[in-house]
Image (tube, rainbow, N blue to C red; front, side, top):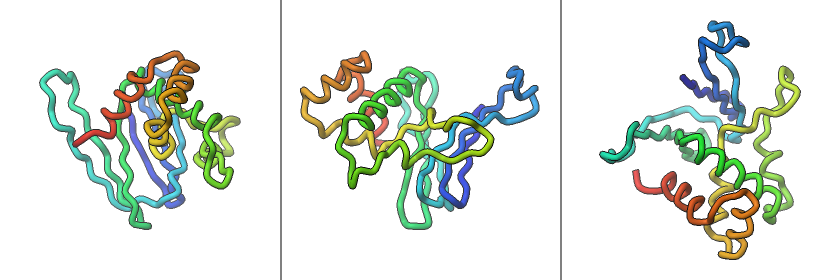
Length: 165
């Protein structure tokens, strides 16, 4: 079971409850991911995905409304898709020209005094991943080759997240 929280600084935290995990002794939530969304969310709504008879588990999207008027969505994905998107996110961070020279990875990292390394895996940055679809085909092929997958696989994953709900 996974629980998402958001605080007044715009930090989204993902906690897992796993009673068999020896570090939690079955009594505590385990912090898995921290993501700085840069917005304070006050309202959330869970929206069900259009049902497909072939889907084993119906998917849902958590829509969040921020105090600055922006909307964001959090969508659970399969582990394989998540891994591909995280690898692609790393490639985009390293190989893309960023606005004003700002590093998106550093922008999303949360300073945490309890952990020696940032807990940045687990939530993919859609604002960064959206740039992949607008790149030239040779550049897309080069990036996906470096992460060991095909362009059409990554585009299919992205379209499934971005598609109609």
